[in-house]
Structures are given as C-alpha cells and as structure tokens.
Length: 514
Image (tube, rainbow, N blue to C red):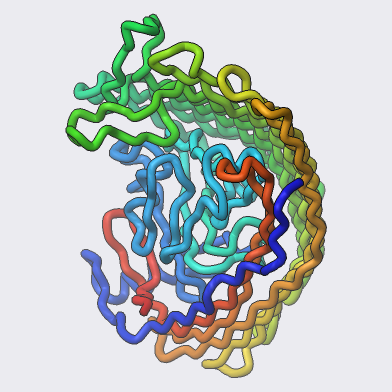
C-alpha cells in the first residue's frame, strides 16, 4: 500500500520589491522608446495590454531575435531572459522555482506530475513531460512573452511560477512570403524554412502556410558499444514543423472573425535531457543515450465577435493529439527500455469582454473546460503501464477601474475545479506494484493590483497574487512503495516600477527584483 502524505507543501511567501531601474538600454531617443513601449501589446493575461500597463514582470522577445537563425530551440530563446534558468531537457526555472515541478523523469510518469511553468502557443496549453522535447525549430513567430511570477489567475493549472506565451503570425490580406536557408558546418545542420500568406477572397478570406525543416547532428559524441552494435545514427536530430491558418472576416457580418489553425510537428533524434561524463567535459560523451520521438497535431478554432462598442465575445476551441517516447541504447541490449505515451487534449475557453468603450472601467469574465486522456507504457528492462484522465472547469474574471487620471485598480479571481485519476502498474521481482492517484479539489485564485502613473513613461505597481499547483504521487525506489504528496500554493507580493528596455529585439519592463 502507498505512503500517504498529509502535510500540504506550501511554497515560501515571496515578496519582490523593485527599488531601482530607471535606465534604458536602446539605440533610440526617449520619444521613440516611449512610443515603442506604448505600441507593444501583450496578450498572455487573457486581455490585450501595452507593455507599460502590464503589472506582471514580463519580457517580450520579438521576431527580429527569434527569426535570426541564431536560436535553434525555444530553450535557447528563453535562456536569453533575465531571472530564467534553462536546464537540459527541462521546463525553465523562473525566479529560482523549478519549472519541472515536484517530479522529473520516471516519476512524472508514475505520478502524473504537473509543471510549475505553463507554455501556451496561440492560447493552446502544451503537454508536459518532465524530459522536455519538441521545442526545436523557431519560425514565423510574432513574439514570445515570458511572465515571471504566478499566472494561475489567468491560466489556471501549471503556472504557479510563471508562463511562456508564444504568438505565431496570423494570415495577412496582402501577399507576403519569406524563405530562409541556413547551414551550420560544425554539426552539418541544415535549417530551411518558408512562409507564404495572402488573400483567397479580398478582405474576407486569407491564409498563411509556414514550414520549417531542421536536419543535422548535435554536439554530443555518443559511443557505439562493441557489445551491442547498432546502425542507428545516435547523434542525428530532425525536426519538421508545418502550420496552416485560415482567417475569415465576412463582410456581411460586421465585427465577426474566425481563424482555423492546424499544426503538425515532428521531432526525432538526440534531444531531451543530456548529461555528459565529467572526466572530460568537453568530450561531450553522454551518460545515457536515447532516440527521442515527439509528434503532435493541433487543431484550433478561434471565434471573435464585436457585439457592440462596449461588448465583445471570443471563444477558443482546441484539440491536440500528442505522442512522446524514446528508444534507449545501452551497452547491453537487455538493459534497454522503450517508452511510449499517447495523449489527447481538449480545451474550450469562452470569454466576454466588457467596458471596451469606457474610460472608467473594463474587464472580462470567462469559463473554461479542459480534459486530458493519456496512456503510457514501458517495455524492455523496465515494464510498466498506466492511464490518466484529468479534467478541470473554471470561471475566471478581471476588472480594471481607473479611479483617477493617475490611479488604477485591477482585481481578478479564478475559481477552478480540478480532477485527476491516474492508474499505474509496474512489474517488479516481488510482484506487480499497483497504484491509483485520485485527486479532486476546488481552489480560489485571487489577484489585486494597484497602479500609479508617475509620468508618461513610468508606472509603479503594487500587486498580490496567489498561485496553485496540484498534488500527485510517485514510486519510491527505496521502499518500493507508492507515495502521495499534496498541492502547492504560493502568495506573491510585488512592488515594481515599469519601464522599457529595448535591445537586440528584446523588450522588457525594467523591474529589478530583490
């Protein structure tokens, strides 16, 4: 029988105070910087806000740095951001909080652990496996928003430490296209990418088709064992990413638009966690070798309708078919294990925006439904099977009130009901280990922000937020038993001064934190 943990894990109370930070780093005058800050719009908090008006600590990476060809993966891009630590094969750590959550590697399978940092692409939450793959290839991306601190009120699950919001480019009603070919001689890496966009029906129907292929070797030097010869290329990495978007804005229905998106992604080869022998670090000889295989197909439909000058309604429906797995390579074939996971995700998010024409208040209220069905297994040296069904329903909202010309108060709350049942069975020498994780919890996530305009270019914010992450379980190899742990929560208070830093395609609010 498993060991049950009854004590809640409460992350430490976090108080962040920005005491300085009035400098700009840019090759432009103050007027241009102020204009740039007011034009940059972030959307990762369920509403559109300029960078200046956003209370969260956020960094924006725009297309000029993402499409430069110098970055091969999203991990490469995030490693450029302050207060972010990117470890091999892991969700990024934000402000010292592990992004991978409470379990990694095998334990993320046995217990269904949740990440502490969520990644969303065009509003669609990405699956989490605590051996991160599927992030190579950066093409046709408009901007990446990196939020530091809890985003649970806006995004719910898996965002107690922060969130990464990726916005890809939308179809245009003017013809445009681009082509990129790059070659890296060190690892014989070929990067080819293309995009074309334009109207199918003038001012009504437009499309966008983009595709990227990465093919080559990585910097690892994997050995081939004489005791277990193989003809597989253990160092190769191949990624294909194709996305199609269709935008419809009917002339006979003013204020309505719909956008259908489809993305097909495949990544196979030497990726995921990479650890090397310490005897000669620069030899890059891996401690273990796996041929990773990640595939996903994502279909989403986004509907927007401007009801009148004050009200609008938007809905995002998405479905993802996700596959993840690996083939291990060991010195002895009998030690090898092959792991496979299949996951289906369905999400429906509907939101009503109000006060759009008001200078005094504006806000939104929404409801969201999410469901995940997952099966996984391992064959070879380690044998286990499992299946998981997770559901969540939430109602959320936020209101911003301009108390005066200088003072603004923003209040928000999210009430969410989360359910998870995960069945796990593992074959052991003394018999099978059976465990069931059955979690159900309703939680409330409030948010309060007070802002004051010091000048046209500077804003001071005081905010309080609550973050949440679900509990789980895992197998202890010491006791050969299944144990459980409770949910995590954090209360964060921040005092910040908002200004803009512009450098090499990077826009961020100047918020030094102690």
